[in-house]
Every structure is written in C-alpha cells, then in structure tokens.
Image (tube, rainbow, N blue to C red):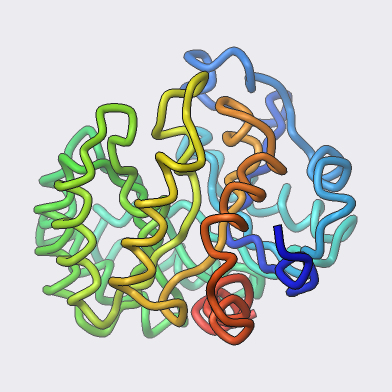
Length: 285
C-alpha cells in the first residue's frame, strides 16, 4: 500500500453509533454479532491510527418514534468527539407536508445535514405523491437525502430522483450490489443509470457486507469500486466506513486496506476528492 494514501485526510461519511439500552433496534435481533451498544469510544479505539478528520453519522433504524432521541444521543457523542460534523436523521417522508414540523426541528439542530427513510420492503413508497412532496421540500431546509436500497428498489428510486431534480441524493453502499452472487452486470447498468443523474453522488461503503462475509476477496470487490469511479468520477464519490456493520464481514481496517489497494493508482488530487472533498461539499461540513 502506498503511504501517500494513508496521509490523505479522510471524512468517514457513513458512521453508525447506537445504544441498545436507550433505544430499540428491531433489525439487530437478526445480527447477534453486533447486537450491543456501540458508542463513539469503540469507534475511536478501532480507528485510532487512521487519519480521519470528520465523520457523518447515519441513522440506525431505531423505532421511528425514537428518532429525536437518536439525534440527541448523537449530539452527546459529538461533544465527546467533535469530529462528528453531520447527522443523517430519520424522516417519515411518507407524511408529505406533515413532515414540515420535523424539518423545522432539524433546522434547530445544526448537525443535521440530511435525512434517510428506508423503503426496501415497500419500494413503491418512494413514488407516492406525499413522499415526493416531502422529498421536494428538503432543499428548502438545506437537507440532502441518503438512499439505502437494494437492487430490487432501484427502478422506483430512479423515478423518484428524476421527479425531484433539486434534491441532492446520496446513494449509500453503491446501491448494495449483490456481490455474493456476482451480479456485476446488473451493477454496471445500475451505476450507469444513477451516474446519469446530476443530483446523485454515491458512497463507496458497505461492500464487503454485500459479499460473502467469510470468503470475500479484495479482487472481487475491486471491480465494483473501479467501475463506480469510472461512472461517477472521484468528485461524485465519497468514502464510508460503515462502522460497526462492517464487523459482520471483517474489520474496519481490513475494509480500509482493501479500498486503498483498489484506488492506489489514482492521483493525489483524485484521492483527495474521494476521501475528503466530496463528502465535505455534499454534506456541507
């Protein structure tokens, strides 16, 4: 690995922290390996030797009624580690204009930079008129929208993005390609479609957990990274660690090293965009 990459300041654009005593996370019942609290101290210990200068917290699917509690929890974590510069909060976008009080609340909490609403189980939700109305409101409040979707939700998601041209969308985990089943051709089509839309950026994150957790290889994920960079360019891509979900398939450092090796031939300027500039600009941190 070339040492110059290690020296580039990094923004981790996809950080999860949770407290299972404070909030309820139903999805953790299916992943016992990470079904415990993960405060900022755990992340600090894992990344102590890395040049991470800023982080963006992304909502962790606690119960919707606990979303305000989650924001306040992260604000407390940010007092312990001021590198937390942004929050992507949960937002019930299906409420349409009734979401406005929540958006007004976010305005009073300057760390909130974007929102996320998962809809993989009901992909048609994102093209519902009320949902679209709420998504179109986001730019008025200085908010972007993170998208955590699997390939089955991509068709509807593309319709939503095209219907909301003024909203900034951030595609988490490169659309969660089915690396385990080697769905590379479908991935290329999906990347082409997303990259064609100017209001989309994407995160190179979460890839090893979309592969076989126990048997993934750097060579296997490298082609996905390379193709995404070819589609979006470094100025529309950002790095994400996906802590602590990344632990399901390895360590934070194992993912980081795999990514470093996949991009070591790019220029310093390109790497700076990928690891710092894009996230800094898109999340306005």
